[in-house]
Length: 385
Image (cartoon, one colour):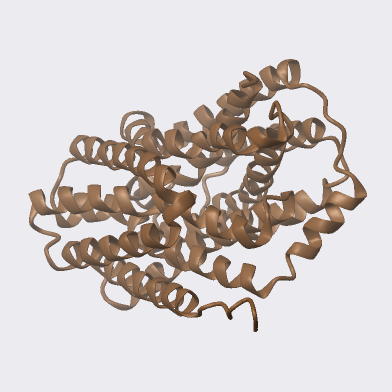
């Protein structure tokens, strides 16, 4: 496979790390800016909202442009804005730039996946090529949150933005030199991609993706305060636990990817059940440290790791075109937005207790399981009918 695919993987990795960095340093940002934990949690939602709404718009605007030029412009703009975040010590400034960088990150995600498909040696190996690009999700999940937590604890939360901005600038330079030129998508390909988005079955599967990721992030976004304030772990111990969470996510992605093609529905049912049980235990027994560690790892195994199964079900009815894939990314990040935002609201209503976020995740998991059951309960008519 072309080595340039790994540059696209690194682009996804930086995007995922940027998405997770706020969740890894909530207490530091809240104390420094003089805001509540729930307000800092909303920054995760704002970033995801930018990805969900701005990402598809930028991808649509760039649908007739060469992929290399579009991707480089997005990465360069992201790097500059990430470095600008710490320059003004105000919550509103941080919130504004998180929205804009979220838009750029959503576009970078979709453009990287599309570019990866164009770099495949043959049409029969597109899936293999795209899987390399999406490997950035797993690696970013493993190191993103614990790394931002570690950096914030040592040098302040602002340093995390400088590090990611510098990494993006370096990636821009290497990509400008190494990525090959590819022509823009044809008019026919773009038109077919738009037509695929009209399928009601596609949007019903998008809904399962939204609720599933919403369940994971409703809880995950508040793991740091849960571990430190409720379970009583130190900052260093929390970093190690979050690293373990990331490693479990890496393992879970490998396992789900192995079974997603043939058993997508079964994988999702099992994952929803694990999320339901683990989040209830976290909500009820958040003070029991050993149990908290185990259940956090279970959420790592069965949370965002359901992505391969979700992608498989979407591709079955909508294909793998640029807009279908980018809109699916937008729907998933909208799940991040809704999960985190609703948790922020419920926490504010019920005493700023991170356990409330776990209950919010439980509700999302139940809804996802119900919608999936309604879809799979329908049986196709016999061929003679």
